[in-house]
Each structure stands twice: as structure tokens, then as C-alpha cells.
Length: 151
Image 1 (cartoon, rainbow, N blue to C red):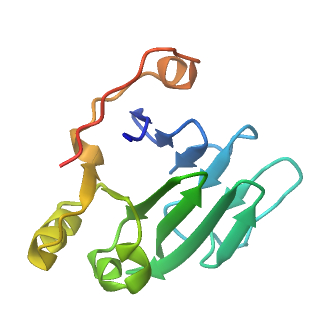
Image 2 (tube, rainbow, N blue to C red; image 1 turned 60 degrees about the horizontal axis):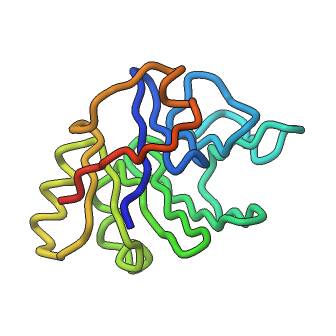
């Protein structure tokens, strides 16, 4: 099963459920921040923002967050029959928990090099190779599937 991933100039929308690196916190989705914020904002009313290393059990999703390299957050997400990791720090790939993920999503070439070094046949998605969309196109309900290259 391929993940539905859409990318705009500033953030990544995954499965229409997770928003990685949002420029503004959205109330309709789980917001995954790229770095630790000053205050933990797990649940601020209608805003669901994950910005602190911890384990989060949110109705239909389980999210484990690791911090590495200058406050960069790395995510392990599991929901329904899907699991994937958003990796910003290559060192996280050596953790046992990451081995259980179906797909590894990353932006940084150093993560790709570490995946090659570990010689594992993991599904991987390099976000830098996904074409950008406008905010309106990315958030629009769309019946056609978006193809994502999995290496």
C-alpha cells in the first residue's frame, strides 16, 4: 500500500491525517512539528500539535517521538494497518523500533545514505523528490490517487 503524500512549499500532508512541519497549526489534523517547541502543546483545545518527545495515543493513532540532533523530532506512526517513520536524524535508523515501520519518510540525503549503509530492504520515500502543490490543491478532497515513488 502506497502512502498518500502531498507536499507544498512549506509542509508535508500524509494520508490527509498528519501535517508535518506546518507553518500554522491546523485544527482539522494532527500537526507534527519538526523541532521541539518551548512549551509542550499536546492538546490545546481543538489544536492537536505534537512537538515534544513522548508517546502519544490519539484515538486512532499511536505516535512515538524521538529527539535527536539539535532538537529535531523523529516520528514513528501507527494507525489502522499502516506504519511509517518520519526520519530527520540518520542515527534514529539504528533504533529497534524503527525496524518495525513499513515505510521510512525523509528529507535529508544523510538519511538516505544511512539507509544504504544499513543495507536493509526498507521502503523509503525521499520527500525532496516529490513535486510541490499549492495549499488549495493539497488540501482538496481528491478521488484520484497520487503516486509516490517508493525506492
